[in-house]
Image (cartoon, rainbow, N blue to C red; front, side, top):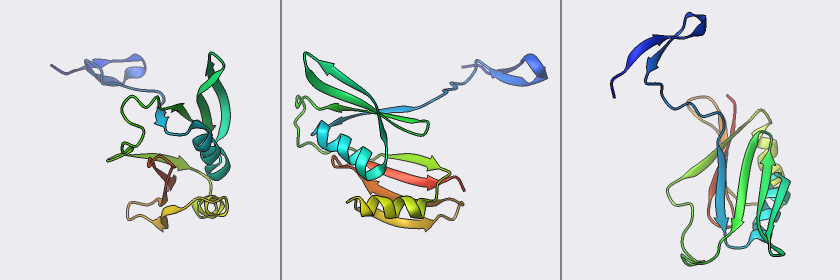
Length: 144
């Protein structure tokens, strides 16, 4: 790809061709037990239910929301094996203006188990980690 600057409105320059500029990121996860995962995300972490997706009278997925973060969890159909490892090698970082120590306490009080207690990172934010029932790692971080 050959890149060269191009004047934009307002006099700013942007390399051409333009790089990818996403507006949002939403996650979609396949889970072993949809009802248990929905309960965990809502009752333990504090997501709210946004929408339910049914097919032929059977609940197949739910859309959850936490602030401006969106998460779709769908019932795994088992085609690749229900007991396979999930979430290996990746984590999902959620940044919040809320007090992460209070959130960690709330998660523990609601039955969650932290992977790591809140700690200050050398680059600024305070961070803790919690793993969902399927093994997906959530990293909850202060803004700075």
